[in-house]
Length: 122
Image 1: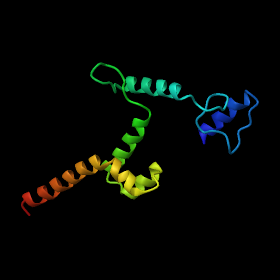
Image 2 (image 1 turned 90 degrees about the vertical axis):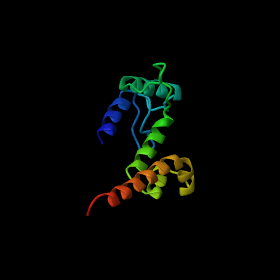
Image 3 (image 1 turned 30 degrees about the horizontal axis):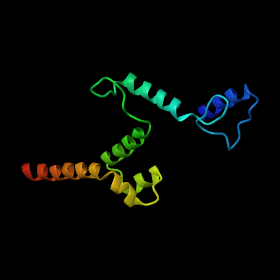
Image 4 (image 1 turned 180 degrees about the vertical axis):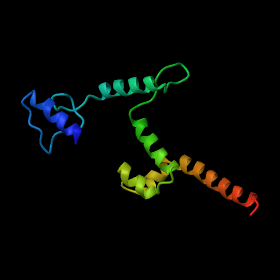
């Protein structure tokens, strides 16, 4: 709610009325953000966080955040159907096809847990 209030004040400076069609993430005057400007800001955040490649440059994109989000959800054990809905994929098979590598790591972790269970003395 705080964002909408700040946005309302910002837009009012330009005689723009906030309504249900107002973009959530927009320029100070309510227009669409330019892709390159968003990427520039995201790369600055990556750099500030130390997320750099071996050359000391940022080679991540804004879309990489989406992949990180989905990967972390899978690593936390969230069901594929939930991840699919959060990402907006029309079919869970799309989600599963994209994140198969994450699920392979999960399978190995799960298998190692059961191995540890049988290795301990009961």
